[in-house]
Image: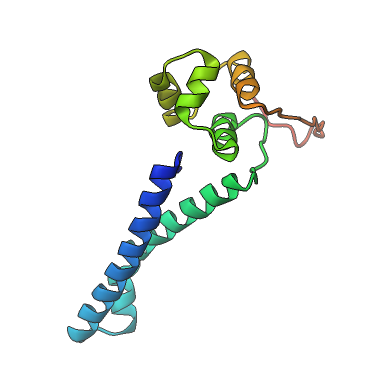
Length: 148
């Protein structure tokens, strides 16, 4: 997950590099006399990395526009907290100041996607970000309810 503008710019730069690298590799493989499926097999790992990076950039751009993924049973709350900070255009340093903690704490929390954070802590972060999360409870039929 891209967490800040510097990572975003680096990812965009790497996408351009990987695109050029793919073109060079394809040309080299064709010069070597490889065709179709052989070239595809050789380029798939590079293409896979390129596609993953492209999706991360697109996800960051969606966050900057304030578009969020829906949560299920609070799974992903940590990633949502990072996403809200990005959508707010706030740096980790600014969030740390609002929370009264050191920037390294926010960095560590985000790197771990707030794993193990309490609901109280998540609420403090949301308040510092000027955001609210609304939830809806859906009762499952007994046959659909997961067994603990």
